[in-house]
Figure (cartoon, rainbow, N blue to C red):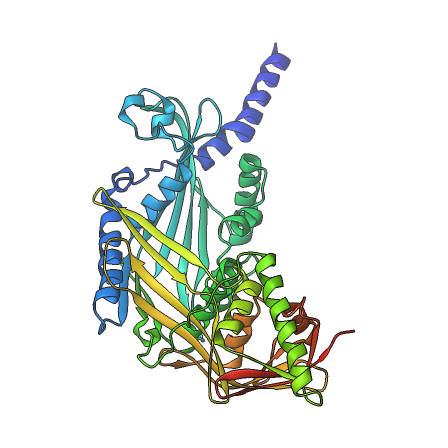
Amino acid sequence: MKRLLKLIITLLILFTILIVIPLILLSKETTPPVEQYVTASETAFYTDLDQELSELITDSESDYVNLTIDEAFINRAIQKELSKSNPNYLDINYEDELSYKYMMMLSSKLGFKGIWVELTDDQIIVIAGIDYANSPDKAIYQTGFEVIFDIVLSEDDQYYLKLNKIEIGKLKLPLNSAFKLASFIVKQLSNKSLNELIAENLTFGAFDSEEFSFTVGESELTDYLYEIDPTFAALLKVIYQENLLILDLSDEGFDVSLNIGVFRRLLTDLDEPAFTSWENDVDKAAFMASLAAQALLNITINPLDPRIDLDEADLNAILDYTLGEKVQFEFPIEFTLLGEEIEYSFNSTNLFIRMNDDELSIHLKMTLSKTGMPGTFDMQFNLSSNVSMNLEGDMVLTIINSNIGEIELNNEILTMLFSVFDDTLVVGNTIVIPKEKLNEMFEGSNIIFNDTYVINGELRMHFGLDN
């Protein structure tokens, strides 16, 4: 009898150590801000966004876009993303089901409450909760975690998040231990480590698991936008270099102020010339055949120094067909405001060429417009150059100047812009178009160029014939 009693006591102690105490230590009651999970949480931000963008379009003196991203807007955005696969969430028609209360069901009785944030003027607190429940109004067991980030301003005036504390249930462990435990729990729930989950969902920043810090700075955002479109990345680079973006954090949320007016298209900027676009290779072949015929005729006139002259319409047809959709972009900005669908579009022309006297210039016009609203906010990239050919037969554009609006562009920005074709195009203060690329552009003409320059607003190209 004593042995049996001793065995029972031993089992009770083990049960308490292995089951009860961990459950007590990991228990945590969390309450998501469901009052913020409503359309009204988006209204203030989208009202300001609509007003700021509309003023850019309608008011030529409007230069700044000022926005506040508050706690309610962030939590509403997180909720919409996490619950998008659960249409029953907070739908009163399903209030007797667990899927009404929980954004995700991890099992038949294990519900994920979600992730939400609380903001102060120097911290971001991230909270998550999981319940084991029989019904929406009866949770048998609750657990969760709280992650507190300090908002730190670095020496180069960039903000980053420094991990201050991780609380898992009632446990307040050292950061390293807490991070490993959190990673273990995440691994069990998602089959991914915490590092993998961060890298997958926060691609616009860099997380340092040794320093426990998350940085969203110039390089991180530039790399992120570059994958979307190199033009966006180049614009962001200019914004940082010229200190056009001001970020601040208050109890109200993230305050953003962007001086975009300096990019406004100048009255002196050149328009895209009229030209006939090629629809297919047949159009290109017809043009090249015509060019070859002109070349043969010119050989009879100038046998010692044959040449052809190409005007703006010719060059733009060639460039437009060669580029295709590599440069031209269309980026929609769509949101719902007070039941109305608001649509903006940020798009561009293709690169186009203008020539004047002995200069060749390259341009890209970018336009912000709103459906149903007259007018646009325009920006334009301009680069003027002199044209020559080097000994290797490469076309060389020696840069005279380059700008977007009031901002002069440096080689780093130009390299980023032209990297969509080839990241080696920009060499010092020149753009070098390799001989092979030049021949590809004029494929079908049987012409090999040996000198080129701009004269009287046309591109003169001296040539020989390809055997």
